[in-house]
Image (cartoon, rainbow, N blue to C red; front, side):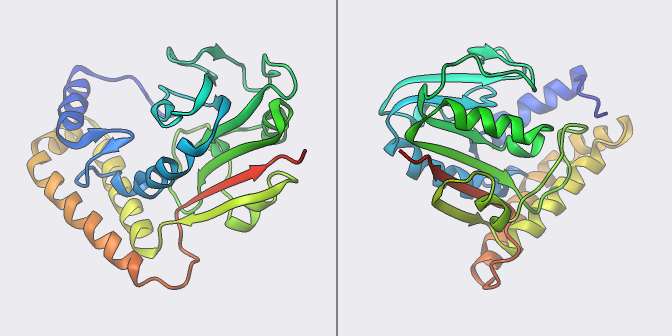
Length: 244
């Protein structure tokens, strides 16, 4: 199990890093995880403001996408933990909502962490109104994270079969360049976090780490432009419309 306890040095480093490089979903191009989110955030900014009615955010975290639902009449967030969630729901529990309660159900970067996926997808489907929209996103080519709660990956073909509904939008995000850069920078970040000595080295080399990440992120974007294979994407975005 990953150790999530943060030391004073770790907290100071995180706060300094966030001040310099941004915090999700507002990461700057020199953040080591910028390529993790740049395509997804761009798509969410395009799609979410068009959605109306009651919105349920499943696995809402600290509700980073709440501002994008400008036309929503109500926004509700649920999660298994967290101070920002309106409802705390156990992983295998029934959602505390009536059938067909929401016009939109959103679950971004959540599916890979759900152990009992049929149950959760069933609940998402149950609370979505007929004619409503279900919006999912999740990684495909990406390192293990959130251990031990990281259970699955899906290709675009698997994504289209997660629910037996019409696929409104299916987008493969990223390419060979961003995938390689994401894995490389995440590997370096995890390696630096291995022990106290390497974490101290990580803090001392921050002035070098930031420009290195900027160069690598730029290279990743460039290589994405010449990747015509459409097979090395790192993330999947899919929208389903529940039939009337």
